[in-house]
Amino acid sequence: MVRLPLTPAEAERGQRLGALLRRARGGRSMLETALDARVSPETLRKIESGRVATPAFPTVAAIADVLGLSLDEVWAEINQPEPGTARRSEREQLAS
Image 1 (cartoon, rainbow, N blue to C red):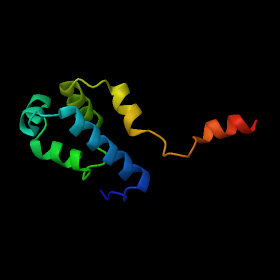
Image 2: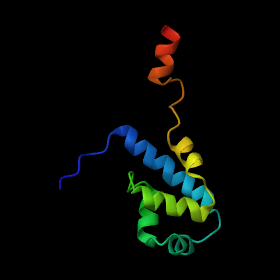
Image 3: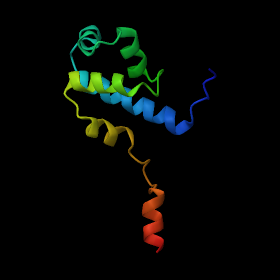
Image 4: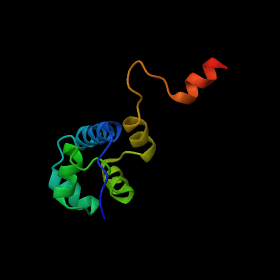
């Protein structure tokens, strides 16, 4: 299966996800976190570094659970609009 290249937006979301997980992990070791989430430490390392920008949902859910993050928090953090831009639906509403 050929994987399509990531869009810039997907890569940016991956970076935000990695940063969020690193912050939430705090002083907790990567090894402990990964093992508690039942993922490999290498998988967690790749997600945190942004090398895996689109990890599988169950992987994100397991890591978020271990770190005490709700999926709503994760979703809100990684889908922040870039400063100075509005979502298309908001622009359309304003134009109406």
